[in-house]
Image (cartoon, rainbow, N blue to C red; front, top):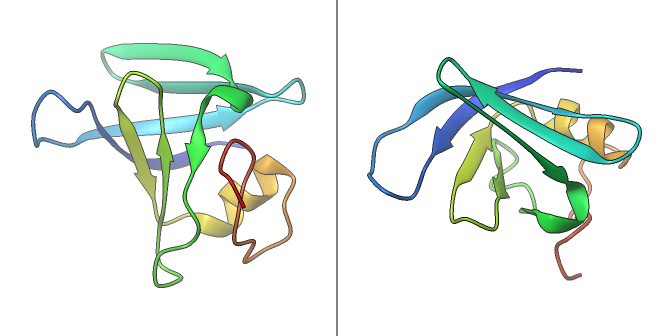
Length: 91
């Protein structure tokens, strides 16, 4: 399942269109037109839903992926819809 959103690299305030996928082994693939990175889901933090509108995925290098496809992100993480906490995030 492909989850669409925006990447904030942390180096500037600009956003870049991006997509995120999580495979059955727990590998998170984040990619866009000019970048791609893959790491295990245990290394990222996922925010609770913010006003039920969007969620953020935080990467160890300071990058942040934001999406409004919250139900799709929950499904990719194996969480029930409207889950408050995701893997990698303290509960």
